[in-house]
Image (cartoon, rainbow, N blue to C red; front, side, top):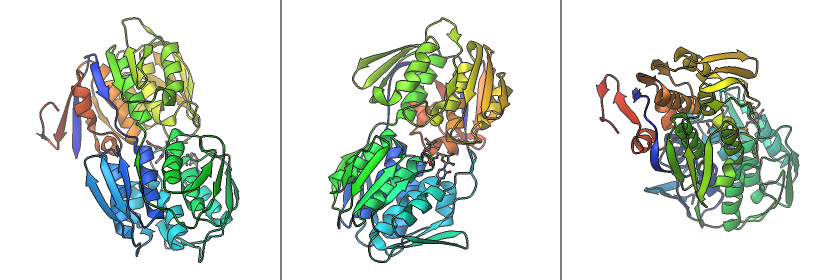
Length: 428
Ligand code: EPU
């Protein structure tokens, strides 16, 4: 199992490039199941979750060809429209194939997800939505069996709570349904808009993606298309925070600043200078001044992203005063807290709130990554800490960040990836 050895105390300086968005790549890959023609997707980051999704599409019968960051999916025939347990247990987003498989083949068999490090993560809203579109769903032996002989039919779906992959799953299913579907209380994340853009290129009729009401007029067939996905706003945000945390001077290039509005506002409140130096580049100056403590509450987009909460909390350990960090999206997304405390942070959890008192000097320690974004938080803490931090179980970070240690080392960090006890690559 790989580990990172992180030597702290070095500012990040220079220019760092953002990869394509993992959370856009996953739904657009699933969308390729909706047509028997090839779909060419560009900017797909070679991270572990994407590899898992590609294996899932291949399991269903699609041909998947990878050429650098361009992935071509040709789902000519789908003899096995199913997502087995082995895949679903490593990646919740496997439920994204439920809608497309059901719409295209009239049936889908998807393993029920179990628990997860950040919360329960049920898929009841996907299931209820598909039932509204006329599918019959049954649960048996840990699997959900969906059937929709003939076509799905358009319907009115109002989500009880906002769900990102639920919105994406049902938007995909509705593209091939008979008649109009209206999704109410839909997610407004940029990744939903990106998916809608691909689907429209494939011949779908969709209006309103990016707002809370999405209208889809079903068509009988979708065709192939070529699409470049959006940059990863969470990776970009992680770099912005890391630069602020190390008092660096970093240009984060290839991002979409409007996708990061809530984070930029909070960084500025904390006293970090963030400037848009080009339409796709943000420059952060950490500066020597002490940071102000600021409160954050995670919300659906355009609010502060839950996927940046852990990283921002690491930064707040260095701010003067008390920061209240409220997690509203997932019930158990504070697994990084105890690890930050082991490094010297002063953080107390009260229900959905973490109370961070700073500034506290962090010192390198052995810590364990529990999920993807918690790992990113601990990398940031390691970059700020005195001495060496050993981060164990970095397979979590490999799920969603493309070569993060190499990217960070190119702008001044010292991170080595070691495999077991042997150094596999010296400074990456
Ligand atoms: N929820 C339900 N029922 C459902 C679906 C969701 O109760 O059927 C609840 C969840 O338990 C959660 C809330 O609704 O409390 C929101 O969950 P959502 O469905 O929006 O999350 P998701 O679609 O499973 C995506 C991202 C996550 C990100 C969340 C929130 C992808 C592939 N994943 O998950 O990304 O945290 O939205 O923004 O898009 C990550 O990248 O590290 C990550 C976890």
